[in-house]
Image 1 (cartoon, rainbow, N blue to C red):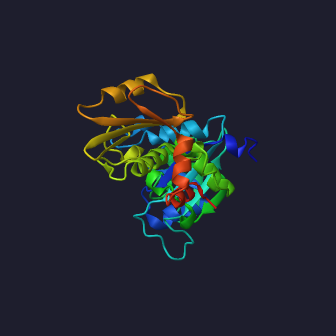
Image 2 (cartoon, rainbow, N blue to C red; image 1 turned 90 degrees about the horizontal axis):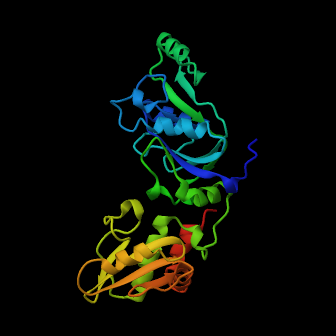
Image 3 (cartoon, one colour; image 1 turned 45 degrees about the vertical axis):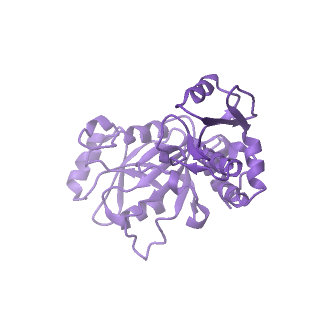
Length: 310
């Protein structure tokens, strides 16, 4: 039993999309195993797979597994896999479990009789030898989850923020993953309930209320954003609207200066943060005010959906 409180655990994200087919990925999901393949080698060192893109994710798996801290992990089966109907698994489900402190990474393969053989990290020679002699198809690298809970697709709303990687740290979504795991909602009027991507989207919708003729000129929201200089870019009544979103306390002077210097011509600049503040030539908006304004409009349903996990 893990002694560390759930509220202290950072989140990770895992994707079951390696060799073996949909039935085996579903089996890994049922077992609560984070699994990578990257060739039939007994190694968690990405440098041993120079021809394999993304193999450095094995290093991340090992580092977090062997850490003295516990982590939550949201596990899913790749959407492109066909999962047999006899498996009670679907690609829209997520399994959230705990990577316990000092977990030993494992090498595993499935024998022709259907049983799995496991070898702890440090037993590379034996793992490779017995794999070669077994007639098994793939030698996997695996980290197990404990105390798992299955989350149905209609309760899971983080799909668009997930990485396509075998394994990734996912700290910015820790609050959401913890809430899902505990079966609790997050307070919709608290800015810390929202991820950085969600906060940018919320602020963009706020600007639509402030400027009814606002038209975005780029996608907003972290990984989907298309502009590296500002978080929000649009136009309203021939005036360029720009915005920077910082879900933290205080005003960043360097960011304010960047907003002042952005582009030529007429513009209106916004800086969103917790607690608000003042700055010359830039409108500073408290994120609490943003949430209050949206909650009084039809956007309240959006806030509910972003923070409801039960």
